[in-house]
Image (cartoon, rainbow, N blue to C red):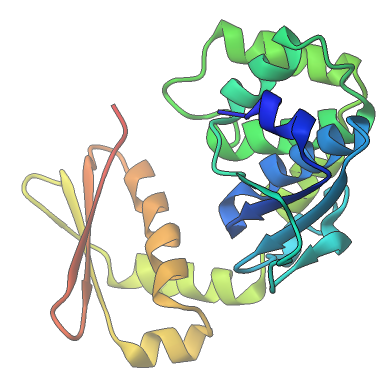
Length: 219
């Protein structure tokens, strides 16, 4: 997962991330600084909702070409937490906050079906280490862009229940995306909320070009 021996032998390390793994990238940034390494971080998109994360301002779109080691931030958050614990790394407040944000995302605001006692035990430790719970919740759960609210109104208005209410089907087109100001990726993410409708086990998102995206409830 994390190449400790290669880190020891490297002077400049590049962290590569996507917008979903920015909490892990933040943790790795702090960890590598604690190892007295020069660190760079690049991501395909730096979503502003993560602006509260430590080192967010260090993220660049263009990756440094001078690094002698690259680390992918696509790491399961629990694995990253366990690595730090097993490596006897002193988790400071910055690392704890970034880890907490990662857990919040991974376990869907702690409503995911696979949340268990191990997760809550880790969260308790992170709070002890200085994780800022309110900061993470405010930025990741409460700060909703207006375009997302507009999109949700469209999705719920157009939602039809099929197959004895087990399938929520929504048909959208480019005009809907334009009217709400969102991308198809954002629409797919928002459509997952339709899984919260009673009896619904799957969501069928139908685009006007006849592409169908099927979203299945986690079990």
